[in-house]
Amino acid sequence: MKFFKLFFLFFIINFFLGCTNRLKENNISSKLEPNSNFGRFLSTRYSLKVGDNDVASKLISKSKNLHLDFTLAELNFKSYLINGDFYKAKKFKLMAPNGLKELPMYDLPDFIMNLKNGNFLKSNNFNTSINKLPGFQVVFQKLNYMKLVESENIKEIDINLDNSNIFNLLIFENTKIEKQVYSKMKKTNLSLIENILYLGYLKRKNPKKFDKKINNFSLKFNYDVNTLNAYFEDKPYIKMKPSNQFILANLFSYISFLLSSQKNLPNSYLKILNEISHYLEPTLGNSNYFLAQIYANEKNFQIALNKLNRIKENSFMFLYSKIKKYRILKTIDKNKSSMLLKSMQKEYPNNSEILSLIANNYRNQNKCIKAIKIYDQLIEKNINKTNYYYLKAICLDKLDKWKESRKILLQLISKNPNDAYVLNYLSYSMAIRNEDLIEAKKLIIRALRIEKNNGFFLDTLGWIQFKQGYEDKAVRTIQKAIELEPNNSEIIDHLGDIYYKIGRVKEAIYEWNRALDGNADDKLKEEIKSKLKKHSK
Image (cartoon, rainbow, N blue to C red; front, side):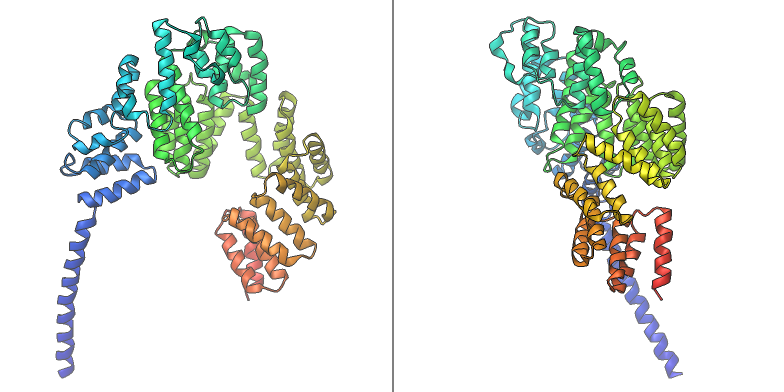
């Protein structure tokens, strides 16, 4: 009886302690959850950091006394800019705290809306406030050139001819200094945007030079020349000088491309530049294509697809937006990606890029006979044959036709001794066959001189070192390769194999298990599971 009394007393005490603890937990969580401004701030900042701007906007819109909270107001303002909602950003300024005026981007919505409306003269009012933003000095320079053209008061001294580019040329097209600008303009090593604008200019002004340039462009960027010619055939902004708005839209997208190499610049700023580009010229595909790339890199695949869906059929980037969609869908929905590839094949039956996608798909599925037929077709019809020969060699290797594969690889190296990927493939293929390891090592060392921090190349070197009996060197080399390619199952599997061969069985089992968690395909997974089953006893 005494035992039951003690048990009952213990139960009552624990019950009340549990209630008290739950009250404390609820009290603490209520201060941090998203229905408080502090909770919203944390959630919004995180959403913006990972690129989920839609969630960020929804969270902020529910905030209390937003006009009094500077921190949330700043986040809200920036979220509007990142989403390209420049009208909402301008309207929000009417109710925002005074401190918002200190932000470098405070006048940006008004400035952009003035550009959209063609009020270039009014834009000068914002020169002092937003000129400090990265890339905007270039924007104001081009605006000043546009004003010179509008005023018909052009003097050679007003522009720096030595630093001319395609944007200068388009601005001064059909003026008395057009030829001077053209003669000083940079015409080599142009970006994709510069190339498209330059081709449009040549199509209007110099059709013969256009024909030569478009072939070179097709060769360099591996674009289908027939599709390119069809695009440049009947576009209004190609037949006549493009509008200032069109030039500026391309300029903002181009600036984002240049600034993307700066590590200290956040993606949010690049998004704003491309949203400005889209706002100024919604038919321009570059901006949305670049936005999709940024969001896809952040793993925000649905937002990336939404941006690609904004690209119009008359845009140069329309076909490439479909290809980008296909690659994104391969990651998140293989059925939809297959359906899209079939529709592209039907719509563009002779397009080299689509044919290449189909062939690569066959190659990845080990349907190499079908893949080779398409690669042969591409080799016959294209100027740039190197990549197709390389992919054909890989297929021949998979079909156990190593002599034919090796012959193609050696021919490619004789034409281009600095093709690091061909050097690596030949070296690795020789290594796994124990074929002339000294020569194989020379080949991979040449490849590493070209790309010294390539994890796949280091894996090849490590494998050769292991085959030559330098186990310690091999382990260090492949460990470095894994640092560069931490999720590559094949490289991790190699390290496991080497550990096992030198008697470090526990470490080998650990690495094999780790390889299963990486990007191993079904075939490699089965091989690893077989080794684990055999050696884990």
